[in-house]
Image (cartoon, rainbow, N blue to C red; front, top):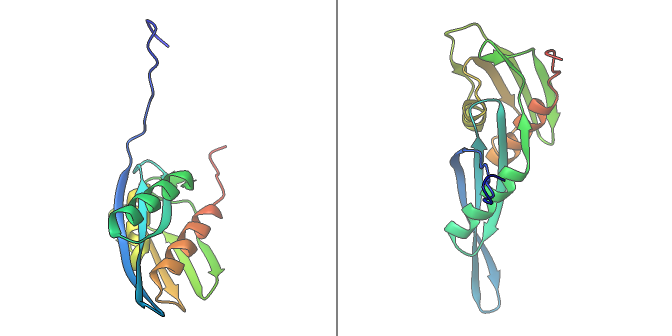
Length: 154
């Protein structure tokens, strides 16, 4: 509070819509159509989050996903623009492997993993996802893998 005014500091996040799905359900009066959106939010400085929002139209679904993603942010420990160590993880039907890479390699990962790591501030990494092609499950698997990193900077 300065001179009677309250300052609210809002962090600037980059956001990217990864997936929009149209869901149609049969009901007695016809079809019931809804939309789901998967959004990734990050500050490119080590924080990233994903959110899934569902609504009757696309823009409200994206807004719900954005608010969910901002609430569930994960801190990524980064050293030399890469990950600290190798992580293997099984989450539901997908198995994920994330490894650090030397400077200049870039992100050698596919699907939603590239978006999540890019918005999280990781510039060099390699990885592979086995077992599932479902982007929603793979996104949650990447977030769970990022939670497993040990912070060696303490």
